Amino acid sequence: MHMHAAPTAGELTKTESNVRVYAWVVFALTVGLLLSDYMSRQVLNAVFPLLKTTWNLSDTQLGSLSSVVALMVGVLTFPLSVLADRWGRVKSIVLMAAMWSIATLGCALSTNYGEMLIARAFVGIGEA
Image (cartoon, rainbow, N blue to C red; front, side, top):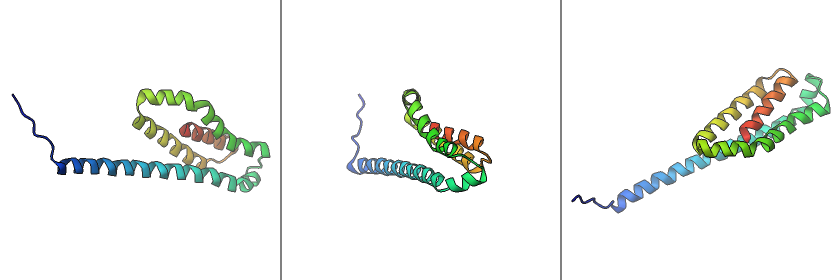
């Protein structure tokens, strides 16, 4: 018959402390990602006049650059949530954050309306 020693109070406290630190790190990273997302949305609106003159865009085209993100989020949130349940939270968050980051970089590097529209659509997919 084997007897197992009960964990001491010090061991439980150290484990609980590690879990709490990890939870706060994950929380801080998530808040940072959300703040970055919010700022990137606002920056686009601030550069609309520059984009309009540089790329000779209409108001409709400018509006589509903002609305394509909301459209992708609205259409894909439910299906991607179902996939996230199957794949797991961590894998899903990492994949979507990576997609969002690459798409945001694509927005910065785009040289015309078509490239920017596609990059903005992928930003929406990453946000969904």
